[in-house]
Amino acid sequence: MSLFESLSDTNAKASEIGKKYVEKSYEYYRLKIFQQLTISISMVFKAIVIGGLLLLGVCFLGAALALIIGASTGNYALGFAIVGAVFTVLSVIAILLRKHINNMTVKKLSEKFFD
Image (cartoon, rainbow, N blue to C red; front, side, top):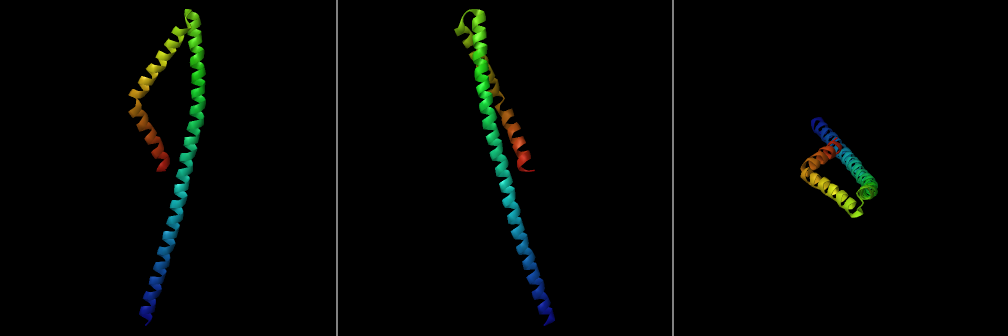
């Protein structure tokens, strides 16, 4: 009977170790998901705040530049047209570089996610 008792104890210990492993793995993955979620939310929040402030600054700088160009040429409409053309050219460049921007974004996010 001692052989059966020994096997029974071994099975009970293995079962207990397996149960602890599953519980610890579950806790680890819950914490990992929480970490990734908080990093993602903080990055989105920072992007919105910084992007909003940057957009506001660019709008004011664009208007100021248009007024300066308009005053120097004597035609305010021409100043705004020139600034609009510059922003259009910058937009076209950004569209042409969008794959590079996407790849850079995925690379940065994957470093954070898989770290």
